[in-house]
Length: 281
Image 1 (cartoon, helix red, strand yellow):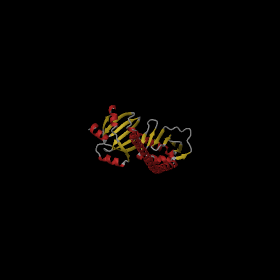
Image 2: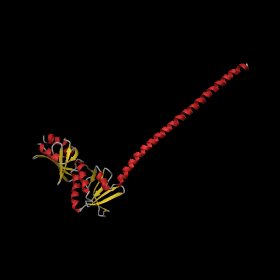
Image 3: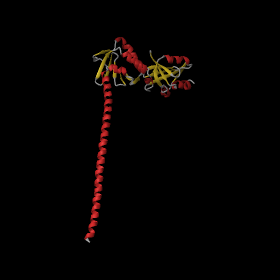
Image 4: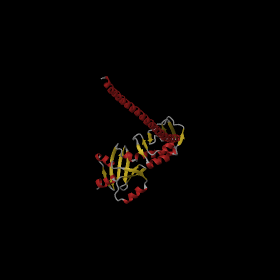
């Protein structure tokens, strides 16, 4: 009986050893394959990291160079590089100035004289900021620029003070931004030739909202259009205590005046069509 059991036992042992050996070899092969993949993946990652770091360093260097160039500029130079400004006075805030109006301002302040500092009497209510993080303020005797810890002060020549005041006033009070902000709209009257109509309070905002402008322009094209078109209209409005006149110059232009100051804008035809088709049909 014992002789018959021994071969069977050997077979069982051999089977167990074979199964264990198979799993052992499978485990070893798995570990080696994983190590191989990990090693090569690591090398590829390193290559990618090197390339990525190289590109990142290049971009960073360009940014740093740009910052260095920017930091070397004076605040006045950076102000002149701005594309847009927002100005305020004691009555209105953040009136957008761009295009020809901003060009005029940049040219005007070129004549200001740099000084070390301003006196204690400097108390500005006229302030502003630009799209490139320059803040400025003026009492029309001095013009001060600030950005972070930097500060530059300029004296406004006496013979240019009044002109600068008028320019600042013009930039605010004949800007479409000021007209259409919806605040403090007083009496509004519209004219067509000798015909006059008062705009009642429930129609004021609707009328003002028809002024949709594209950009500020020079006077030549609007004046040409004014002479070509038979019907033109005038709006006279009391805005924040300031008297304004808005003259249509054909369908595509308007002229805004405040005292001796005037500006021309290219607009959408909504205002002209409203006056022509609804108010004076």
